[in-house]
Length: 206
Image 1: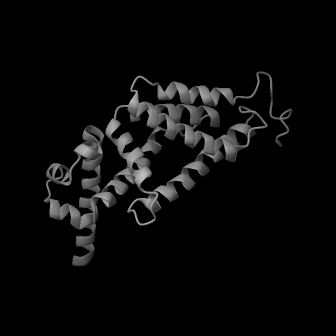
Image 2: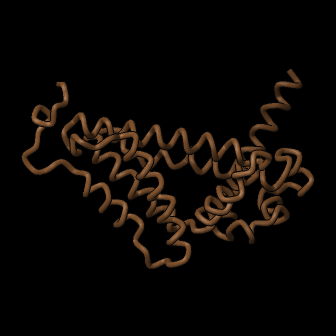
Image 3: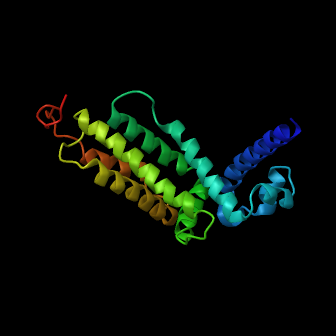
C-alpha cells in the first residue's frame, strides 16, 4: 500500500508540475520558462522537478502533450461534422493566440525533434499521425453529410489542414496581426459543397 500511495502522490505532483509549466511557458515562452522558474512556481526544487522529468526536453514534450489533451475541450460534441470542425478549430487557434509562449514552444520543439534521439521525437511523430487521422475522419464525416465537396479526398485534405494550421502558427509568431482563425475558416469554406448539392447527387451512399 505504501508503494501505491507513493506512486499516486508522485503522479499527482507530476500533473501539478505540468499545469504550472503550461502557465509559465504560455506566459514566458520556452526561452523564458527556465527549470528554476517552473520549479519555484510548482513549489519544488529544480532537482525535484528533474526527478519527475529527466530533462527539460522531456518536460517540454510532456507540456505539449498536456496542451494537446486540453485542446479537445474546444471541439463541440454535437452538431454537423463541418460545423463542429470549423467551430472547434477556430476556437482553438483563437485560444492559441492568447498563449503565445505555447505556440512558440510547439514550433520550436517540432523543429528540433526531427532527430530520433530527441526526447520529443516520439511525441511529434505520433502526434502527426493522430491529428491527421482525426482531421481526415472529421472531413470524411462532413463529406458523407453533404457539406463538403464530394471530390474532396479526406486524407489529403486532412494533411493539408494540419499543414495549414502549423504554417499559420509559424507566420503568426512573426506577425501577430495575422488572423489565424479567419484564414483557417476561409480554407474550410473553400471546400464546402456547392449550394444545392446533396448527398445523393454527390454519389455518397445513404
